[in-house]
Amino acid sequence: MGVTGAGKTTLMDVLAGRKTGGHIEGSIKISGYPKKQETFARISGYCEQNDIHSPHITTVYESLLFSAWLRLAPEVDDRTRKMFVEEIMDLVELNTLKAAIVGLPGISGLSTEQRKRLTIAVELVANPSIIFMDEPTSGLDARAAAIVMRTVRNTAVDTGRTVVCTIHQPSIDIFEAFDELFLMKRGGEEIYVGPLGRHSCHLIKYFESINGVSNIKDSYNPATWMLEVTTVGQEEILGINFAELYKNSDMFRRNKALINELSSPNPGSVDLHFPTQYPQSFLAQCAACLWKQHQSYWRNPEYSAIRIFITTITALLLGTMFWGLGSKMGTSQDLFNSMGSIYSAVLFLGIQNSQIVQPVVDVERTVFYREKAAGMYSALPYAYAQVMVEVPYVILQTIIYCLIVVYSMINFQWGAFKFFWYLFFMFASFMYFTLYGMMTVALTPNSNVAAILSSAFCGIWNLFAGFLVPWPRIPTWWRWYYWICPVGWSLYGLLVSQLVSR
Image (cartoon, rainbow, N blue to C red; front, side, top):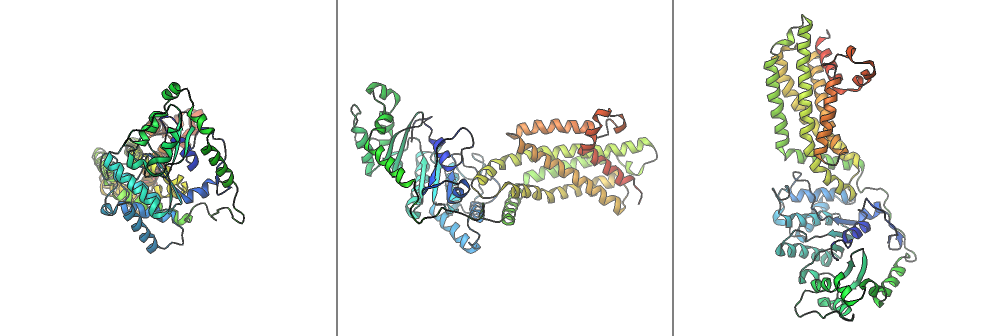
């Protein structure tokens, strides 16, 4: 605990290995051995202040099953894994929400308190030895906070796990549910590090023994009293420094002695080691990530429906505008008109694909950061799943565009060779635009910046595609870009697929 700016979350992030910025000094040891983050991630859980879950992936039960699938040892069979998930759901009181969709915070799905309990459950199914929780009661009313903290207490008492929390001004019941307190002042200095005792007796005895500190009133919240008497203003009034008092106390000396004792490994002990960085194999990670992405797409029909709708409307528009031009190849203008129909479809639908996919990927990106930091999987299986889940939807989009509408309305030749080449190049075009939209989200801070970046490059591709300015007329010093412009290759392949004789 501590006032705002004391460094509570920073300290816990450093201990949990989740701090990615800044300069970190010192050493962390686990049972006397230097901490290895890859190993520590396997035996620890971390509940962030913001409850981050895939909104459309699955039900509550399937979310827990996915976490257990990737974080439990491969020796655990499916039956045992499901039994363990059921036990965790019972522990955190989620049985009544087993089939509920997670949804978006404040919009659909679970409430804030239910999402908090799901966050705890997702970490518990990994069977960790220690769980870190950042402000588990943040944003909750008194009733919801009590439910969450009952879950936290059950976790510690019923399962024997260590729970480390940062918490801000808790009620008496919540405060006295904890066993020990690490109290900090602004700047990260310790004021009190020790046991609370029954009804916070040890904490109260320590501060009341300091000259000038007023005694706590009957039925007053010890957490509130503790923060009030240790403010900077009180330090100035009393002319003392609580951090210095702690460093000169017997409690500090006992803690230092305990640290020195635990900094050396026990004789005969060995450092914890896992043969692999991740609990599951690469193929198992790929299968789990693909299953998750499939569920996310299947339960988010708006994304696919909008894409198919735009494709159909665009195909009807282009088909009626370029009606029957595919069979007219007598003049250069006819050829240019056919090329215009291909160019319009590739560029317009391609840009739509890249823009529509960006918000979907952006929502899942924060979930990816959390799951990767937890040691669930590496980046490659996740990227593989994101690509593969798009394939059937892009195939459907291509078939709708080519077969049902455009190919018959524009009246390109119905030879199998020409048709399937046209189908292949349209599929490849739609696919690389979709992957380009994903890439821009991965390289930028948010979907807004990604939209700006992708629009800029799409404009450049439009210029160098070879349609507005034919390749022979492009200045020599810019012709190199024509050869790396993907739209240019799409136009080239689609046009040749219809002109070549077979």
